[in-house]
Length: 309
Image 1 (cartoon, rainbow, N blue to C red):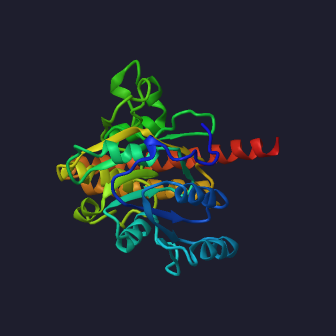
Image 2: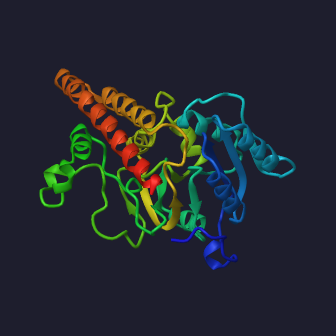
């Protein structure tokens, strides 16, 4: 997959309604401006709202320059690091367009991605969530864009490594729903990625946006869950593609994983109704937290060795 400049506008670029792009950024670095440059070249985007959750002085100065004198560009800053979900909610309240595209600052839209989302949204019942397909620099589909419904067992299988035998023994399947090639047409999935998804502004408001009790991670799973519970559809648009750099934030990996652990805890505790379910959650959560911490430490060691080569 290439993240070069967008190609000239063609039939695949035609969009139907104005779209506001909502971006929350924290210590993201240079790729944020690559993301913004690509968005500015994308037809149909009438608003770009960037929420500064805590960037360097140099990046903040560059963002102020990016905003100045440009219609439809808004920089929201001065509130500190309020978390991803709260940041998106803040941006959504400032948006006027009927459609909202939530986009990570480390995602570069491919040519025609927005038009694919616009086309595939037809027929989706509100409050819909329509996700995009995410790829790495080598063109490999990343995990997260199509996921199973989150359960305590699936989370345990994923973090314990049992999901590796899930293709042979379905009982051990984890959260990842990538089985076989990427679908050729729009396909329903229980969960899509919060790194890139389209919603209508009324649908987002119907759900009261993200649950701000989640600081970072799992808030997208919760929103998908609530959208489906409200009668909406959650689906993946395979033609809406983005290059996802991932892990470009300067935040320590272990801290990010601990926020994820906190997100898992909130999600499962909120949904545990019976005493046996509550006990199961409290027994499994320390294992999930330990697994996430170990994964962060392994990642730090491996990435450190790679950077030395």
